[in-house]
Length: 274
Image (cartoon, rainbow, N blue to C red; front, side, top):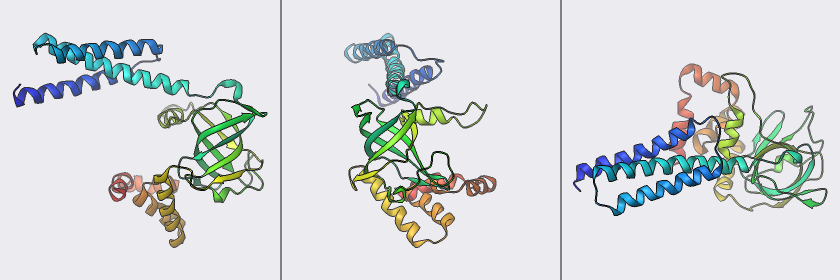
């Protein structure tokens, strides 16, 4: 195989994979998981034939079709698995005792703190229940209707293991046309339920239970906040140094977009972090 032919062949494989992925993303609804499993099996068979048979135009087309089927099946199968991780409807609206590890940098705001939690175990009225692996939670304060009156919310750090009492619901987004698709955002993150911490005893069980990289990012952000008295400037520095864009105020995002420098928060922030 000449170098030029090999280059075209590899480019064709990449385009075939992207074509299969793009085809699945155009589906209005997911098929049963068996459909995607068959696509993966058929794609694997096509790729195997292309590798074992003498390279001809027909065999090359079979190989490209196989790669496209693999892209289609893998994308759809992963989506089916994500949907299966969504919380069961009967668990909505109940007080559930959850034990888990803080999986993201907590974001502190005027109404409270938001964070993601990787679930270790959950109890409903003393009985074990199955929850999605990842939850998006709020720990509210002040006048918020779901606020907890006296909780150690400020002690929350990435990588800690806590026990909370929470109230959950399945992921939902706004139906405003052309608005931000919050439900899709949660789907991309793998979040299977959202909710808030109830006004019940919360306990820190382990200060360093996991997510070592997030703990390092937390330490850097804490240092920035401790040494930079201006909270808005500290948020910009945190975005540039550790990619914590959520620390930037909405007003500052509007300013960056209006002046055409919003891309620096993501591009330059990524480069500085690396």
